[in-house]
Each structure stands twice: as structure tokens, then as C-alpha cells.
Image 1: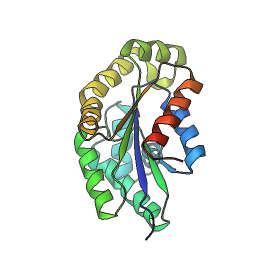
Image 2: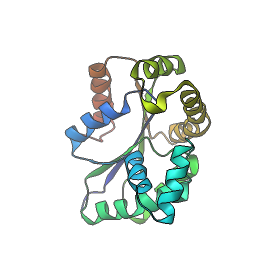
Image 3: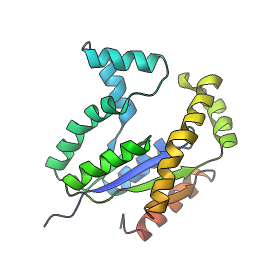
Length: 195
């Protein structure tokens, strides 16, 4: 029997350095990465109804409704299932508790492993400091505060859910990039996720 596809939900406050760590993890494991933000930006370029909706919501800086996000995930996940992917990393998702439940149902149906949540933890103060330095287009003060508020209200309950299930790995994201990666690698090896 083929070994089950492993799933990592990788979350962290804006500015936590997720992108860098996900790249290290991808290189180490060969896991595929689900980059929802990229998928949404691509969809926003399309002239169909869904593309127009996504474009409007992105321009307003709001959260994309879950059914829209799921409609982009489904074909991608099914394609990964067909090619018997060893593992999958979700970059910054799930962002809501019911997204986690919906994904878990899908993974059960596909006989994939139960997901692990990797939570890269930094304080709000540290997030603000880093984002100020970074100065990207979506890092304006009002937007940043909104994203931090949303993280606390929507993503932290997801982290608590996986904490109760003992399916969480918490990493101190305030260390150096190298220390964060060393810690991530060690904890994933201990959880028998990578070898």
C-alpha cells in the first residue's frame, strides 16, 4: 500500500518569515506547496465572474470567501493526489476553523494523513516592527493592523484546535532564520514528519 500523503498547515502572523521557512521545508522534503495567495492573484487576472469577484475582494483588502478559495484548492489537491504526492504544505492556511474541518474531510476521503499545524510564533510587536522594515504594498499601517486583528480572531482558534488534538508544532519565530529552521527541522523529525 502506498504511504499516505502528509499534510502540513504552516501559519504565522504577518511578518513571521513563513515564506523563507516554507522554502527550506520544500527543499528538505520535496513536498508540494499550496500557495493560496498566488492562486488568487492568478484568478484575479481572469475575466470570468469568479476572477472579477476575486479581483474586487483583493483590491478592497478583504478576506476571500472560503468557497472561492476551496474552488481553487480542489483541482490542485486532486492533481497532487493523482501524482501520489509525498506531502503538501499549505502556505498560511487554513485561515478559519471551518476551512480546517473542510480540508480534513477531504483528506479523509483521499486517505491522506491527518494534518499537522506548524505555527511560527512571533509577537504582535515583533510583527509590526518587521512589517515596518519590509514596507511592501500590503504593509500599510491600517492594513497591517487589520491583518493582525484577523489573525487573532480567525487563525488562533485554528491553532488552539490543533493544540487540543496534539497535532501542532510551535516554533519561536523571533530567533534568527537559521535557528528557526534548525528548530523546525528538529521538531518535525521528532514528530516523524521528516527523516
